[in-house]
Image (cartoon, rainbow, N blue to C red):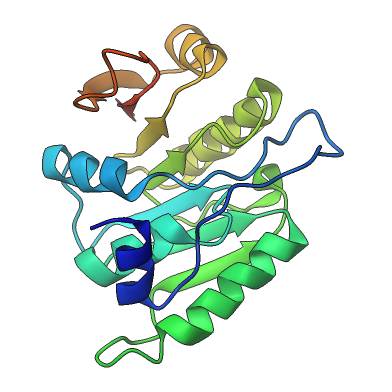
Length: 200
């Protein structure tokens, strides 16, 4: 399905990238993960309804609604931008009107990523290069502290991964790369078109 078809099925509006300049050098502009990339990711990487996934820089909530609808997964969207947060909430209002959709296990919070308090049940964390490595380091440290308090297996999912993110994870944390998923037809032209899965 293309973007319009998926958005129609989910009764949401997630297209159109952010335009203009941002006021902060630490937070990157909104760009949703392509649906084709999500489709391929989840043919190669397993999630279950028992997972609790946090999407940092969720924007309008594309990943969140996709996972909730097709996999029944608990998803938490973290978005600092007031306009995108409101659009995610508007999407949620339309989404829950769909037959057989329950407004459970789907949450959105407007806050800075580093201010989100990691829940003891959060076990997977999604990043589409949403902010600088300085912010990423703070978020990962929050994740590590949560793991120390509540032992569990945790995974980071990086799409279009920043070299700075990779260097930090591999040199300064205990996370280990367990899987690389290259997007067919795209990776050969652009080596950033891939997902990296790190596990702790």
